[in-house]
Amino acid sequence: MRNWKMIVASAVVVLVLVGAGSLYAQQKKTPKLTTDDYSEITRIYYRYSWSVDSRDGKTWASLFTPDGVFEYPNGNKVVGHDALMLEPQKALGDPTATTAVHMTTNIWTEATPEGAHGGAYLLNVVPGGQGKPATITAVSFYEDWFVKTQDGWRIKHRLAHSEGGRAPSVITGTASK
Amino acid sequence: VNSRILQAIVAFVTAATACGSVYTYAQSKHGRELTANDYLEIYRIYSTYNWMTDARNGSAKADLFTPDGVFQVVSAGGKIGRTEVGHERLTASVQRELGPATQTTPLHFVMNVSVEPTPDGGAHGGSYMLNVKPGESGQPATIASLVFYEDWLVKTPEGWRIKLRKARSEGGLGPATIFPPVPN
Image (cartoon, rainbow over all chains, first blue to last red; front, side, top):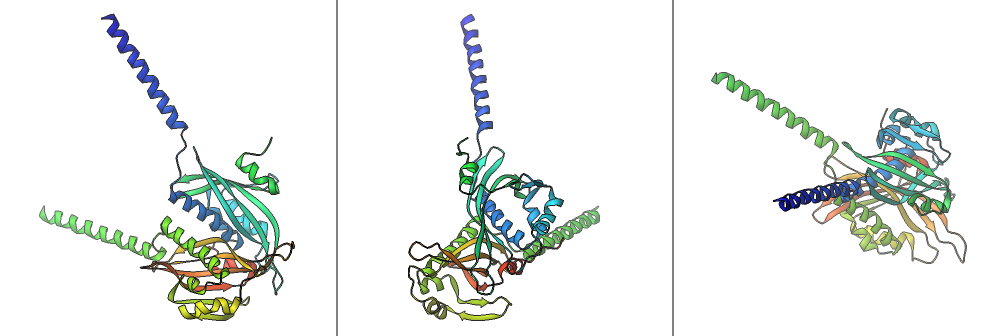
């Protein structure tokens, strides 16, 4: 009789441990991003460039969460929808035929337990005007943290990097300390 | 009692019809949503367009348009220039306008492809395009020009096709011309 009790008690302990382990693994596990997720995040990157270049602050800010953050390489931050909405015009002034435009490429994103983390390369291109060639005035990088909200994917935090060729290793976490 | 039930049914049907109309109106105003597959197919059109242009494959480039598709050059002041209409002219224009490809002929680099659904089931949008001229014997490449494509696309039984492409040269004013800012 005592043996039976021991066996049942051991089984219960094992089951509890297996259950707890499984629950922990589930919580730790990062959900995969679907094709729809990647498509939506890619569109955010492109819409971002168009809206900043047309000084469309409303569309630009709508790509962020209401408490979203845009952080400049020098650490200055623009926080929250109202401030973000004013930023394109405030930082860049009126667009003209020869003001720089943002050209984004090499979009890279990975799932995280909270949403997604990733980035993109950015060329700042100044149109030449009147037959002159255009020039690349800066190569920058965006590092982003995304979350999936009820209204779709949004940028929670965008950090602009200006480390040149070192930026990809800084953003992907392979830079030497 | 029967009259009350009838009134309730009439009220319910009226409310449901009103909701349906509002939904249909909203759908038609903003256009049906594009799926991830739609976006992928449209992105492929933008990339293939560059490859086929740079390879001087006029026929493959023209296949990306509808049979009555239009390519139009719009200059800095918004003035409409060269216009190619239909498969035959679109095919011939590649070789005629660009000549044979050489080691230093400019190449087409497209970025920021952004399209939105339209009420008629199509899509409107565009991309930024850099015309990059490879450098000669060790010289750096240069950006010969910056152009914005504005496109109207339709979904045909054969897949997405360009109905109208405008190649615009307004420089920094291009983005706001194609996607006007939303008023605050």
